[in-house]
Image 1 (cartoon, rainbow, N blue to C red):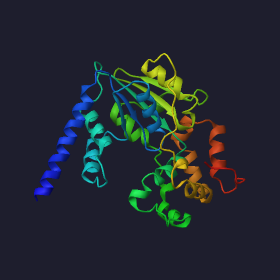
Image 2: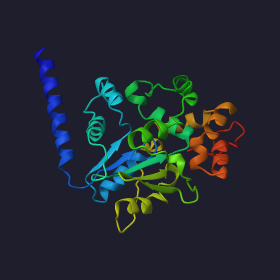
Image 3: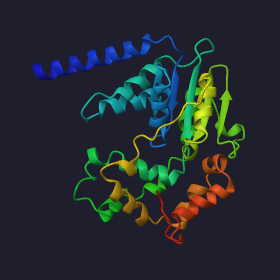
Image 4: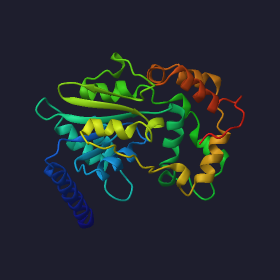
Length: 276
């Protein structure tokens, strides 16, 4: 009992200190608010390397979801990202305290595969004995649960912004939607190296491009070979491809030619080219 009380006290102190440190900055918040595995970690790293100290990296701002996620947190370390999101949720943007926000779109099948591998080690299915077949069993019906409505379920409730109300030009690869409380920069994972540096600089008012590094990339991790083999073995059905690539999400952010290339990448009829 004493050990449990001590642990809880230490947790509460760490959380309070973390929240206090986040509130100290005089800079307006820059919030990278995006679904997982869209390159958001790289964008955060780029902004911090550029001298911005009030950068937050969150995937959700719903207080009920965050409370449940914190209660279920079982891994080593502290849930910094959950704490950041909770603190942000207590002080949502206003006309006198505006936010600059970055959200990122990505080919939904590529995102789903990457999001599957990311927590694989701590959830027990990515280990030395793992095989492509065992991973395919774990992956199961994920392609039937693609995050195709993330902007409706996350961005709209948080900021009142319907990203689909205004057209997105795929040839530009980015868009800034300005409201009285938020400047929302929309990017695409596929353009982070080419488009994001100038777009991020425009968002935060930097005179020079903010170069985006490659971080947290599956192809560079210990399981890179298994990851590549899994990609080659993945064989989405035509129905799954239709659901993904006829969705409003994909149709909004990508051109017809880009969508055709996505389909070709994952199609069973593909010629065997690389899927990385």
